[in-house]
Every structure is written in C-alpha cells, then in structure tokens.
Image (cartoon, rainbow, N blue to C red; front, side, top):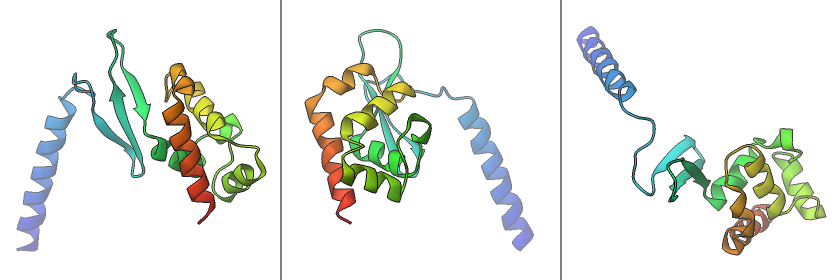
Length: 129
C-alpha cells in the first residue's frame, strides 16, 4: 500500500514539474507577487516599456538585508545589521542602494519617499526586538 501511494505521488510530482517547466517565468500582468525565498516577496512594477522591473516590498528588503544578502555591498547581516543601524552606519537609503546595485530595485526607488520611510520604519522596528 505504501509503495502504491509513493508511486502515485511521484508520478503526480513529475507531471506537475513538467507542466511548470513549460510555463513562462513571468506573467504579463501589471503586478505579480513571487516568492524569491520564504521571506522575500517581490512584485512586478508596472512599466511603460517592455522590460521587466521587479520591486521588492520594503519588509522583504529588510529581511533580505538581515539574512546577509547584501554583505557584498557592505551591508552586514543578522546582529551586525542591527548594530550598524543603531550606530547610524546603515540607513534605509543604504539598503535601497544595495538593492539597486544588485539589480533588485530600479534606481528611481531612492526618490520614492514612501518606500524609503517604510524601509526605515521596518529597520527601526527590527532593532527594537
């Protein structure tokens, strides 16, 4: 009985992966939410040209920084991020610039005061924990 269940499950998983592999990577709608990792949500920003621009949500950007994903750009991860924020060495604009440098955000994100404020708020709330 266990073998039958295992065989059926294996066949199902192989058929769904074959279908998924034949689908395009991105949909063509204005906004699409994707999971890059378990904690990094991304949405496709509407653009007037045909290129795809991904927009990381502010909470996800801080989570990526906390995970150490921007260490190559000089942003420390984990407790180092909290210490750098508390000492003023890392601010929201530093995280946003690191994401721009790695192609995760468009350059105009730095001029979006709401986005900058949301990243700063998330950093502040993370450092209070």
